Length: 137
Image (cartoon, rainbow, N blue to C red; front, side, top):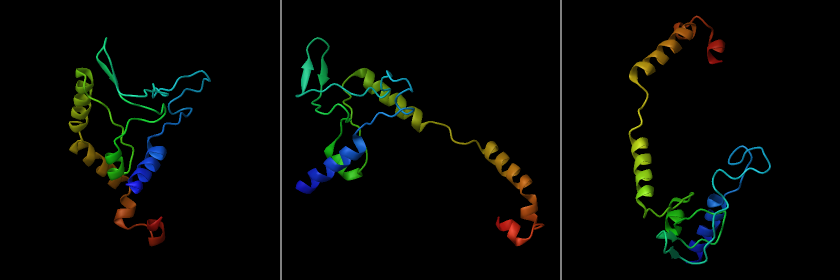
């Protein structure tokens, strides 16, 4: 069990910890806020906001995403975990996954055009009019 905890702690520290960087999540301006919305709110315990029915998950680190220790241990990479209890969050995930799964691949006619252009440009290489040293380059 100690090996499991040490491994998860090491992975989370190195993979799930956010570090703001100019040009990545911050603009060049000194007063710019992080586009990734860090630091995040810290909650000492799990709680439910009675007015909005929003669940505040226990979160003790403002610069670390939520994570699943078992998933992090098994796949050994950043495993950002989100609670999907609201209809809006579920719809956003469905839209994202659907868009990803149905994205169009490269069209066949475009691929053949690329091959044709390559063959035309490299005809001296393919026809063997260059010596072997030039062809190697």
